[in-house]
Image (tube, rainbow, N blue to C red; front, top):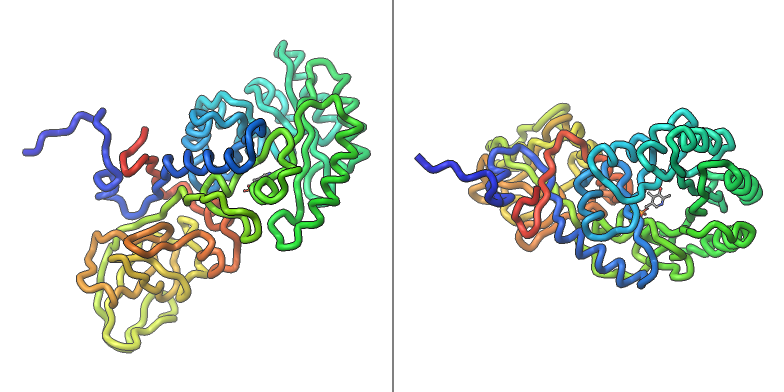
Amino acid sequence: MAEARPSSLPRTVAETTRDLNAWIEVDLGALAANLGALRAAVGAGVEVIGVVKANAYGHGAVPVARELERLGVERLAVFSPAEAVALREWGVTRPVLVLGHSFPAAARAAVASGITLTIDTRSLAEAVSGAARELGTTARVHVKVDTGLHRFGLDPEAAVVLAEAARRLPGVEVEGLWTHMANADEEDDSFSGQQAARFEEVARRLEWIPYRHAANSATALRRPGLRLGGVRLGLSLYGLRPDRFGPDPGLVPVLSLKARLARVLSLQAGEGVTYGLTWRAPEPSTVALVPVGYGDGWRRSLGNRGWVLVGGRRCPMVGRVMMDQFLADVTSVPGAAEGDEAVLIGAQGEEAIGAEELAGLADTISWDILASLQARLPRLYHREGQIVR
Ligand SMILES: *Cc1c(COP(=O)(O)O)cnc(C)c1O
């Protein structure tokens, strides 16, 4: 009998995935490389705010946040107070900024966890102040200026009023002022210039607020003048370009989605596959069952349109995507067998399928493709194929 291996020995991704139907591989080396490339692109003196909302765009919020922290990222950002508190519960210690709305009832838990809320109402500012006094601490807050996106935040005039009011509340330190661009990743991003002018005007009136930020990935790459005190990087940290217009700092995709063929079967010409029999074999064909479905976040709209890599070849997805599985035509891969690895996102041999390509096929954006990947998929964190705990 083979000796049991001491569990402290590093294990490879290959060993770990032998018994898995489907899984996500998160390449921490690529994450570090992207951070380095982005730091070089935005220059010294600009903080990196690592955006880990929506489960770190499907990569796993806690492991990614902890790795970014280890790599020296100055701050982290999420959407909701609940996401922020969860990071603290799992040991994340860097400043965590909430980018979305918080209800006053969420203030106490956030302040107790040392979370930086973005305030948009007087009642929230007062709730933060009350919690800070009760806990004997000082709570930092940021103020969001709506300069034209018309999403979350306050009009310039209201932002000034709230910031001045919050400044006077005991236990509250207004640390940051920020905004967000509407057309940063459009070919014509000139509206960013107008938004920047509105933001500067507010910032002039609130010059006592020390920290300013306005850039997501696209803005950070395309508009050096808007890098300010820090840049809020999401997609680019995960190795994808937000658009084709800004410079390419040489990003490497961090996430791969893989599965093992669960069944390989031969079809005669005319036989159909899966619900509705929407695809029929045009000639005697070999098809393979891939155990990933829309319940994992794999788009149903990719049915009869997408591809998977098997044996280093692009194999067309055939029939409908179901909750847990779909089929691919592997006729071009002689010897395809149960247990073979299929790559849904990532590289295999000379071929690669990226989230951008899938977004194009599924009529969405790469952010959506990644953020849709569900918790059901096990996530493995590795450096050069060695599992990292
Ligand atoms: C999600 C988000 C970001 C990150 O955007 P990317 O395009 O992924 O870099 C930055 N700022 C705000 C306010 C966000 O909501």
